[in-house]
Every structure is written in C-alpha cells, then in structure tokens.
Length: 328
Ligand code: SF4
Image (cartoon, rainbow, N blue to C red; front, side, top):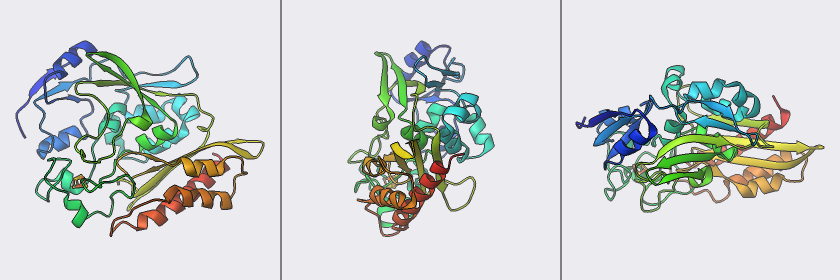
C-alpha cells in the first residue's frame, strides 16, 4: 500500500479544505476504499476521515419526502421507520446487498461511490484495465465478462455498477446533495453516474473535492406498490447478475404511473422509459408486464458470454412487476 497523509475532519469546511489536495479521498465506512488501497488499486495522496461529521440523520422533508444523511449507515437506512413505510423498495435493495457486518459500516454516500467489482479492475495481476489505468486496455472484453454490461458499454469498458441501493434510488428519482469549496449543488440521480465512453476511469459526475452531504427522496406515487428483485449466483453475499426495481401507481384498477430500473446491466442504473410507457393506462396483468419486459431489454448488446442476461432480465421485470402489483 502506498503511504498517504491522514486527516480526521472536524467539520465539513475542514473536510473540504483537506480534500482540496490533489489525489485526496474521503473515508467513511471504508468497506470498498480500504480493500482497493490494500491491493494498490486506489492510491490516494491523502485520506480524509469524515466519520465525525454530523451527516447521519434521516428525517422527513417539508415537501413530504425524506432526507438521508450521507453518513447514515446502510443498516440505519434500511431499518428506519420512514424508509420502511414510505420507500420499501429502498429497504429491500439495501438488505439484498453485502452482509450485516458490512451494512453496519457502509454509508449511504459510500454505497453510491463504490467502484465496479470487475475482476480485472480489482486485481492488477489479472490483466489490463482502462478504468484502473486509462489507455491500458480492457482484459474483460476478450476474457471473462459473464457479469458485465449489456447496455451503455464501450470498447473501453464493459463493467457494471455494483450498487443495489442506486437502482432503487433511481426508481425513486432521488436527488444527491453535494458541497464543494465553490458552494452547494444538487444532481438528480439520473445524471449522477457516467457511462464509460472513452473515460471509464471517471465513474460519476462528482467534481474533485466535492462531498456528498445527503440523498433526498421525493414524495412518490409509485413508492408503495414497488419491488426490488435481485438475481445472482448464490442467495447471499453476491453481486447481482441482473436486478430490477419497479414501482407502480395503480388507480381504479389502472396503472397511472410506473418506473422500471434495471441493475447490473450497465455502468449506471438503467431506467427504461419505453417500457414504463407501455404500462400507462393499462390494468396490471401478465400480458402487459411481458410487453414491458420485452421493451425493457430491447437494444441490449450482450457480449459472447453474457447473452443470458437478456432473457434473465425479461423474466426479472415480469416477476418484479407481478410482485409489486400484488402488494405487500
Ligand atoms: Fe477494466 Fe472496465 Fe475492462 Fe473491467 S470492463 S477490465 S473495469 S476497463
């Protein structure tokens, strides 16, 4: 591991000042960053510990939504009464990931900032990786890519984002609150993650030195009839092969609004508006769910070893919509 400076921030301003140093990184739960530092993938010049900042609250907003503090642990978010009552899809997604011990440490902001689990990114001994070393190549393209992207990839990178929570947050149209030395700003989650194009080393639209301070959930008509379905090689402690978060607003027996977001198919949660539109104005049922599932996977570009994700994704969409429509 490369030597680094260590700062324990006393305030947000103190953290922002420390992180202004090129190559500095924030440390919260450390469940991803520390692993990557140990295997020399992440080599920060300085680590800014933000665990003492007052950013752990989860509270209702005046507009009927909920604000989740950046340092709220995954366990705290998933078990909070407001989240369980108003946004059960988020609790489901979080509880489907990692282990109890990791969820007790990992934070809401850290969950968004975690990096891909592509084996070539995680282990420099295995092969070239443009995300780790821009311009070096992508070993996954010619070798192991069973878990990789079927949407939004490029010849530079075919990795997927590993977060379950981000898929649910996208279905809820969350807003990310950020603070930097230049002030505060917000980013809708649909604009938070970047697709790889020619720069797979840049995962998201967070600017250097910026700190996520919170994640805001709006009041939502689709948050109650919702479901998060995660399909994976084993039932616990595994990343998704395909996941889907769905939400339905059913009024007088007709779908008035719908959200469908696929996970583990791209470098960002993959919302499918064309599939959502197919549901509008129809009563919930298998035939319309199958039509939406087919639309959701239209345009997929699988690699030689991950074509199964297209079929799996369609089944996942039908199953999740069925479970959401049935209700809790
Ligand atoms: Fe690296 Fe992306 Fe290729 Fe994986 S898919 S080896 S993360 S460039």
